[in-house]
Image 1 (spheres, rainbow, N blue to C red):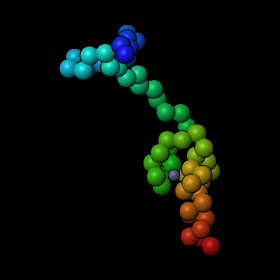
Image 2 (image 1 turned 180 degrees about the vertical axis):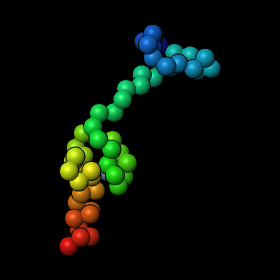
Image 3 (image 1 turned 180 degrees about the horizontal axis):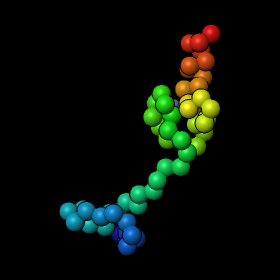
Image 4 (image 1 turned 90 degrees about the horizontal axis):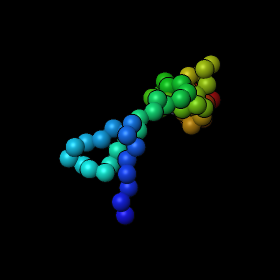
Length: 59
Ligand SMILES: [Zn+2]
């Protein structure tokens, strides 16, 4: 199979026909796992997964 990369994609000369388009992640950065996710609460600065873990340890 032969795929053409979009002109605006980031390409390496050594790797023809492969391109990557970089987008900014949307959302906030979780202060615990540093993942940028839309689900990160602006109040706790934690993503859903970390909020559950922290909740578990704070009880
Ligand atoms: Zn997290």
